[in-house]
Length: 273
Image 1 (cartoon, helix red, strand yellow):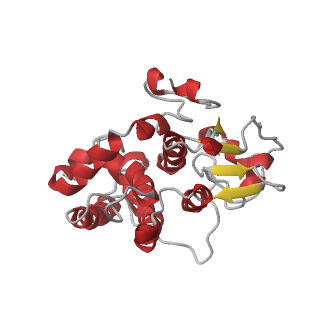
Image 2 (cartoon, helix red, strand yellow):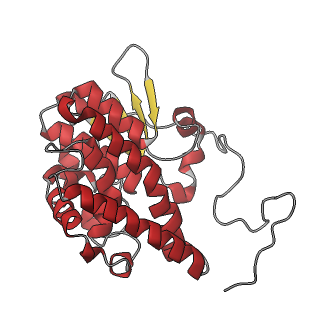
């Protein structure tokens, strides 16, 4: 292990802070966002948090909600697009996804993926079943609070940190497996996360934990974490992965990897066909 770090009395940002990291918020450049023809304008990237929203939008369209047509514009976070003034005006926290609903007299800005899922589910009266509404919200908010331990904790130290350190990897691997067990136990008793019906809770949780079960997160992480232990979670993950709207949603705002799976911008169903 590296030499132990002794924190100073007063912290100051390191001169060699990685990437775009800063300790201040707000816009860094003056950049207007593009606007398409549909009322819903999505500015995002096909990371797990972005995929939650595109899955829901594609599921809404598949269910016949024509008003859910949307334009999806790529935000390349590695290039700092999230710090442009237009994006910050929608999300002052400079994180994807961000959505603008222009269907009313005044535009409605939406940020935080959980907030966007809840807003759209209520707007279209879909994927938030009345009989399991509270349980759906329990699991939606569970995901919002739990996934940072998977992504910012385990994923960062296992896959992205400049140095592999045993202590943080062990700490977050332990927590990630505990969370997988939470889900596995839940799914032993019901077909979907919140009950008998597919809901926004499934759409929120799958891009993180389902994708991990599919071997699509953090390189060799699925083997490292022995995800095959979680048989009920595997059944659920495979069921969600097979849904056509999920397969479509995963491709929107993707501009890396398999070229056939990339749809950097989406303005109509034809872009995915």
